[in-house]
Structures are given as structure tokens and as C-alpha cells.
Image 1 (cartoon, rainbow, N blue to C red):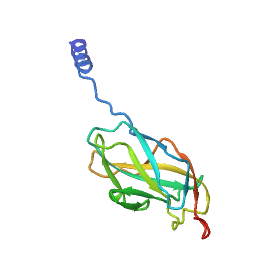
Image 2 (image 1 turned 180 degrees about the vertical axis):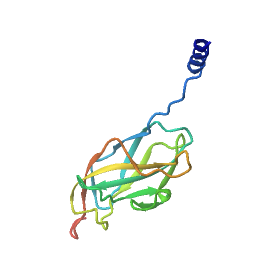
Image 3 (image 1 turned 90 degrees about the horizontal axis):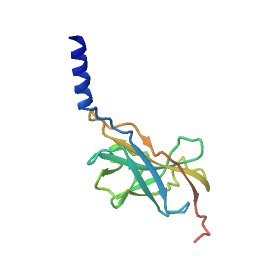
Length: 156
């Protein structure tokens, strides 16, 4: 009898496989590798593991190699949102209704900017957890190297 119950349970388990969600992941590419002054950089994001109609919040983040002092602005509608702004005030997108583009630029007044040179650029994202809370920041699976130049007074 125990073998029959076990076999029945195994049959039912195989008949209705468990749904496994893939890990969320974002990979980015950009339209250029350097920024001069207030120039904008266009990122293209490829996403996997997200659910159709899921809401997430995005932010671009520049930093020096080995630093976690992130800086930068992300375009949200017609305004710019500072990297340090709270998660729910970052750019909000809906999976399936977004073309994968994000526009970012430097923030020369931020302490993370330490002069002309090479910076890492990644895309941060937050999602709403099953408990209804906003996750901690997650980062794109790749990092882009970007040269940022602050123009001097004589540059045009």
C-alpha cells in the first residue's frame, strides 16, 4: 500500500511540474565609450528572468575601479534623477512595455567624480518582492568602461 501511495504521489508530482523562475538579469551596451561635459550616453538593456508586466526601477551608476561611491544621473521623462535618490523615485519601467533604452550622464558635483579619466558604468535595478517590498539594488551582469572628461574653462 505504501508503494502505491508513493507511486501515486510521484505520478502527480511529475504530472504538475513545479514552476521555477529564472534569476533576473540585465546586460548593457552603450552607443559610445566617452563622455565630454554634459553629454548623454544611451544604454541598451537586454533582460532575462523578469515577468511580463513586472515593475522595476532603474539607475545608471558610474564609479572608479574598486569603488562603491556611485554617481551619475538617469533620465526620467524630461528630468534627471540623481543616482543617490531613493529606489522608488528612480526611473520606473514595466517589463513588456519598455524598449530597453536608458539615458545617463555624469554628475561632476558628486564626490564619486574624481576628475577626468576612466570610470566603470553599470545599471542598477530594483524590483518589487513577493512580499510587496522593493528589493535592494541589483546590478547589471556586465560593466562598461567609460572615459569621462570635465571640460576646462577654455574648452568649447
